Image 1 (cartoon, rainbow, N blue to C red):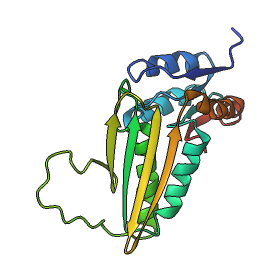
Image 2 (cartoon, rainbow, N blue to C red; image 1 turned 180 degrees about the horizontal axis):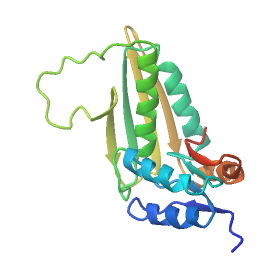
Image 3 (cartoon, rainbow, N blue to C red; image 1 turned 30 degrees about the vertical axis):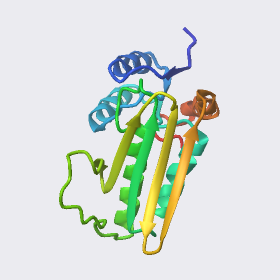
Length: 198
């Protein structure tokens, strides 16, 4: 009793039961667990419709630099013909691509549509499956899983005569805490579903 906010960094297989318990009991939730597809978001919206005073924040990344990297990438997308994402995470990460990469690709795809960008050039004829990454919207994402990494993402833009790389590196998980605190302090002010720390 008396719990106002739960922070969930568990596992995609268990997160929905945790959220059901919290929302049913009127507890706000700040969620960093990845794997939120349209189906899970729809389930979450349904849960929240039963308790309209509860706020739920689903954030693909709590690193403030990562949030800025996503926003900068969205802005840059309208100016470049080509874009791809390389994301690198620790070997124990259970999903690929990362939630951050998926969110970045969605933001870029939306920006490309708004600026009426056509299909990206790619003259590849012979492709081993997976060699060009997994596409989310318009954007190929290449995932690396290896010991030695925490969470890293590079968004590479290209056009005639130039490239632009926007990179974020989480060296230590302590870097996520300022964003988690922003979420905890503000989730109750925003009943319903909020996706993204921004």
